[in-house]
Amino acid sequence: MEEEIGFGSFLCLIMAMSFAAEMERLRLDELVARSMATTAPAAAESLERTAPTLADFAQLISPAAAGMLEQLCRRSQALTQRRFGRVIRLFAPLYLSNECINNCKYCGFSRDNPILRVTLTVEEVAREAQALKEKGFRNLLLVAGEHPKFVSNGYLADCVSALHAEMPSVSLEVGPMETADYRPLVEAGADGLVVYQETYDRAVYADMHTAGPKRDFAWRLETPERAYAAGFRRLGIGALYGLAAWRREAIAVAAHAEYLLRNCWKSQLTISLPRLRPCAGEFQPLTHMTDRDLTQLVCAFRLFLPDAGLVLSTREPAKLRDGLIPLGVTMISAGSHTEPGGYTGAGREKIHHTTRGRIVALAAGASEWAPNGHATNATGQFEIADERSAEEMAELIRRLGYEPVWKDWDAALTV
Image (spheres, rainbow, N blue to C red):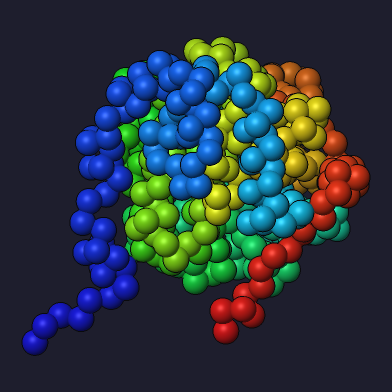
């Protein structure tokens, strides 16, 4: 008797080549060289294409195309309004834990940073979510460092279950898992999975990740495919700009997005465009990306991927975010905190250090590094740049002639 093939196994069969394998065949150096050598006429030709290729995308982010930024912005704005209307989705990150088993040079949660750590209980997570609900949010992104001792699959499923009835959309940004481990999270009500590759440059990736399971480049790169097989209906990807040359990173992200749209077509795709921000450990960006570069990249992504959501977080300053909202961005965060308990002070009495997975109580009068300069809250992952409240952002969106959308999904739609 033939063995029955489940949906996840079927997807694995039809996706014969993962993106990790496809990336090995991607002529990334040639595309970067093409971008840097693009002439103004060639960039203008790519700008006029109705269905640009990856090579066109490389030309749209070229130095030559930077000289026609106004035209890029106009076309991106018009295309975004045709595909998405005049709406901006709002979401909030909710940090569950800043414990982590990885050493990542650029991250405030890195295990060797002597930061103030805490993992919220499910009840505390629900309290944080309630505070966000009162501000209007119905779309949450649950974020946690990667540490199996503190953040297990069962804990995540319990958190999702506790929030699902009140929050129509709950997404996750947590350590990569196997498909089988993702399925209980989907069953609990999680509908989205976000995973940044951080950098698509293998050499830089190896240098940045010095210890922990995150060192496995290919394992992380294939995470969206495993999440899709588990049933997530939203997938989010992105690079962290400031680690490698931004054009090289952007071309790799574009190729990854193109692959996912082709092979994981039942899920919606979002692309985040985060730039490095100050954090514990005082890591300095290795490369520079200007505000003008980021604007050009937003427009190029929109023209290349007209149906992909583009996400801009509070990492970016207020003035820049205001200018980018009409140009191609479709989803933003607001009033964000990047530390567990940031919205209500939950977990404050349990803050500690962690050494080799062991909790170490704080010494009396401790005053270690914390975002607000006081040892009363857990340490955040990074410092935010736009500190405006959700209400202020919603009003700004309206003044720009757009509608802030707090909820665009309900579980009843799948019944």
